[in-house]
Each structure stands twice: as C-alpha cells, then as structure tokens.
Image (tube, rainbow, N blue to C red; front, side):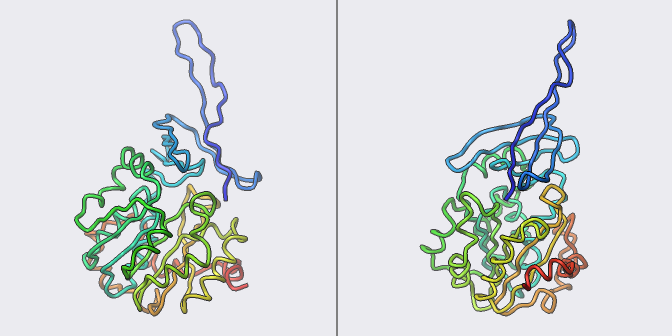
Length: 303
C-alpha cells in the first residue's frame, strides 16, 4: 500500500582538513506519491535481501531501531509496542479459554512474545514465511523476541496458506500479523484464505487480522470487511495509534464465531494479570475504547 524507498541522502557538510565528512540520510515512505513519512537515519545497522524481500534495520534518535521490509516501516524500538499488544491481548482477553493460538506472519516475534504471557495459553505456533526476517529482527530487536524461548512457542517457517491446508489442527485464536496486501502477503487478504482460517478455528474461535489504515486504505478495507462478514457471524473493527504507520490510525478486524469483544471481555482476568504482562499501550479501558470508531470509519466498513 505504501511506496517505501529506504534512503534519500543529501550532503550536510563537506570534508575539510582535520574534520570528518558528515552527511544527512533520510528514510522516506510515500503513499500514492502524495503524502508520507520521513525520519532522519542516524545509522544503517543492516541492509540485506531474502528470497522474498529487502530487509533493512535503521536507527533514529526518536524511534530507536526500526525494522523496514520492502521499504515499509514495520516496527520501532520506541513505538510503545502498540501494534503487538493490540493484535494479541484483545482476542486473548475475550476468549474464555485460549489454549491453542496460531500467528501467521509476525516475523519480529512481538505478537508471539505477548501471547505466551497468558497463563491459559498452552501453545503459540508462529508460521512465518521468511526465516531471514526473524533472524534479522531478533538480532537487532531482541526485546520483542523473548517469547521465542518459551516452552509454549512453536516456530514454523512456511507459507501460511499451505500450512493451514496441510495442518488439521484446530485453534482457539488465529492472528494474521501480515505485512501490507502486496507481494508475498497479498493472497492472505483474500476471501478464500479467510474461509480456510474459519475452518481451522474451533466452534468458539476468534480471528484477528491487521486491516490497514482507514484514512488511506479504503479500497482495501471495504472489500476485506465485506468478505469477512459473509464468513463470520460477528465482525468488528478496532483501532490503535501506531505513530510510524501511514496516517497513524491503524485498524484490526475482530472476527468471531461466538464471542463478542465487549460483552465477553474478561476485565477481571486482565486485572489479575496486568502487572505480570507489563503492557505499555494496552489496558482494560483501551480494550473497550478501541471499538469506538470515528463516523467516517463506520461508514467505510458498513457501506
């Protein structure tokens, strides 16, 4: 959805006898060539390519280390972990007994780390296509990957659709922690894949999927929610503030066979676990408030 182009450079000074040459490097990410986001790069920590995409790790004074995939910002050291907390804790504190969790995508391992914190969870399988993303992210953002060492964690490197087609396991919660619906992830935003996910959920299962920026990505969001509503009896959008993502307001699709994220939210379980989970963004009030949508967003997904 975005046209991220990693490095834009311009000279800040010229070499002079006895002084080091210094330069200004900037990261720029554009949407439709009309608007975007830029930040100063203090250091490029790693730049490589996998079989699937370009992977960069840059460092900025405000955001710390940032993971960039195919020229799009994915996660930052100092973004308050909002995305990972919201994509995991909202469904986990709604389902009454979330024992078996599947994450498709999630290469930075942040969602995995949040999910294994729940005492009710017995296993979290993370199915990620690109092994190199996991390796690079863990090397530079290790605080996101502490859950990898949990005995509950099960890492699988595979295409998410193929994994579900070949695997008959039923899950309480499936989380689609995918990059934008372009490139390797495009097929995982289609109705046929969402139907496959539905079939792999238990009778009271929950799907949560990242669903882009309502302000900028209406053309992708509208058909996605229309398709989901032909499959799941309950489909709700919720949002969070993600300051490094396009237009800041980011959305998630909450899709359930039975459980409602407001009616069935287990506030008492949250209160009992809040100190041990140690969130920086998510809490009980945020859980509820996240489902209060601006009018233009309501109209977008109801049209």
